[in-house]
Length: 326
Image (tube, rainbow, N blue to C red):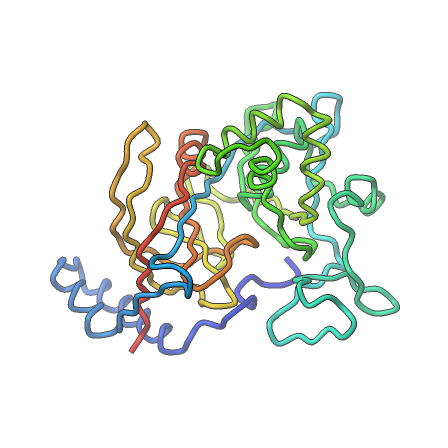
């Protein structure tokens, strides 16, 4: 990856690093009781309830690590490529000033004439990256690729039964468009009923419709293969660490640093037709182009189809309390 993920967004405060060192020393001394843990957080953090200007609570969605069938070689069964990060892709950081370029661009292409906007999804699908040798594997269809790009990581099961892992390595920098929101508006579907499962079913049912709708999302994500990651480990988040189900969250990196503890309190679907209370400490370890605002979080639910079903149901208010190091 050309741009280390830890450089992106708000830097990790030195005070937070110091608290983490204290925590490591505490754990190294043996088992820690609940009272010791509570006392540690009370001594070392102040607690701040974060609310957006126009609402009483924050907002939570869910995401997961999908698994699809794929191949390391192109074939009639697997014609849809996934791409490695292009060498000329430059990620924009908060301190970067790019005169002449749209301020909404989060990345650009380095050329002999300077920085230019990177090709959008339609241009890439039409061959803008052909001949560069960036293809890392092939999937069955563009819908599978779309889901992987939305989630930012995934597992791909190869024809021989082995599994390769994919981790996020950048995107073309163009704004993200929610296809669920577009479809909801076009077909008069109540937003509460527009789940990821329903969106995928609609796309799978009509390839031509799927192609045209997916192209409305001009954002395009690139991946790196990580065959060294254990199959049982969680995916690698933007902070460069494995994600933990129902503990790791994605946040807006223009607002919060990686490693920040956040107490989340919400009632969310349990994935089996009921609701479950989620009241626990989470840690900011990831980010996403659709996660914008100070009280916005995306909860990592887990890996596989069951986690994917539950993640797609989560669009709920959340009490968002930041633990800021004293």
